[in-house]
Length: 143
Image 1 (spheres, helix red, strand yellow):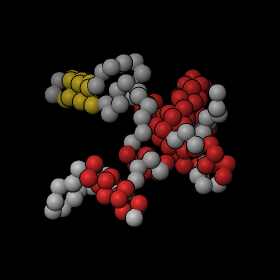
Image 2 (cartoon, one colour):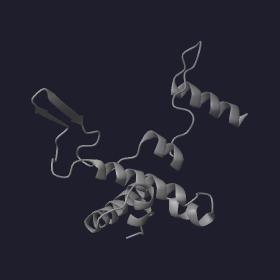
Image 3 (cartoon, helix red, strand yellow):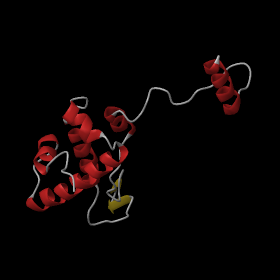
C-alpha cells in the first residue's frame, strides 16, 4: 500500500487538536483519501518525484477531505438534520456530509489539475457532427 499524502498531525495543524481516537481514525481516512486521489491521478507520485506537482497540494487536499468527513456526527449515522425544541426556543442543524463520505470538491479537483478550463464547446452557425469534424481533420492532415 502506498503511503498517505498526509498524517494526522498535518490534519491537526490545519484544523484542531485531535484526541488519540480521532488521530487513529484520521490516519485511516487519510490513507483512504490518498487512495482516492491516486485513483483520480494515477501518475501523481511520479509528478511529485519529478517536481511537477507540489507535494503540499495533495497533502492539503487529503486533509480537507478528511476534515469534511470527520465534521459529521459520528453517533447519528445517516441523519441529515436534527431539530431540538425546549419551550419557546428551538435549534435546527442540517449536516452537509452526514455520512462522512470522502469526496473531492470542484476546487480540490482544480488544485490537483483534474479540471481543464474548457467545460463545453459550442459551435456557432452550422451544425457539426463529430464524424464531420473527424473527417475534415483527417482530410486536412493527409493533404
